[in-house]
Image 1 (cartoon, rainbow, N blue to C red):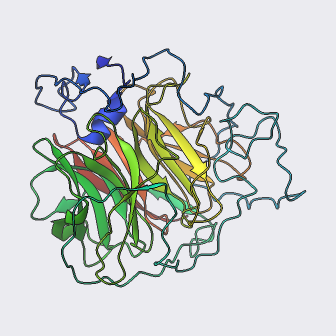
Image 2: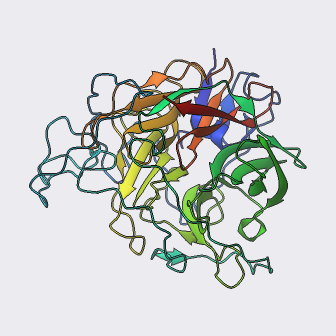
Length: 431
């Protein structure tokens, strides 16, 4: 059994694993060498620079206000094709049924309980976004000048339709997972994210006490071997920069960093410079961040909805899945809300949705150790079904940090089943 000791920041097992922290360090303590073989002394955490105090567990929740957990629908077979979403009636109305989880709340509802991919937010037709457009964020914090790198050609987004594109009858089950080998890198890795062509992988790697973002390439999606590995040097700091999510065209990257406050982890965004192909100085997504941790971002293909994990105090677990939406990439996200039907009393990790928003894949320790779970729904304005463990992918060790390919046929995740944190993948065929 794993005994997790949480400090005043409510640092959970799921978050410590995602961060790549050796336990008993940086405020994380877990007494289980199945997760990490080495245990080092805890380090003291510096106080906030502004002199403010951090919320203690059980204290008044940080903004936004904490909702009650929602109810869940009956289980739906996640391998079967989902029914097409019903068209919205009464366009412009904010009124929802009592069961809706993750839809835009009406004025009478408690803020923070809404449904992922609300019916009012229609899925965008896959196109190649304007790579010169950068979302308007409230603050820009340069972190040094970036040197030249050969420009990269944007990859056109090619997402299968809501029923799986060429898989008109949906997908079958995932096959047996295999380890992804990253040639030339001797480090523990986690938090994978893949570009739309399936050839460029972004991930976090821990070298000593530094967590950085790396990229690696493969010649074919049939291969589990990635080479040409290199750090994304223009985003590096001496601290922690990790859990990346790269947009499908490869032009924007969302990630966590403690560059603004060594004791805090916040969500940031960087966009490529058209002239050099390198990422420009990142912008902090301040509308999503709190004095707690925010990390493990994932976005819809149009980047109008983000899911992420936060340790802000709630009546759910120590780390929960939150989400927020916006009407354009050129505006900030709205107030975040809990993804009520996916969270539990335990800890949840990154949530990735299928392109149609009808299937969710995420990690949770609700049954003991961190494992991968799936949930589904027949329509986007309904709650997700009761999550079910993906037994074919899970192991006796930790399995977390899920990512889906653009076509939904390849799943990546991090696992310690080989004794170290590594990235694994599995494929599924058409039903």
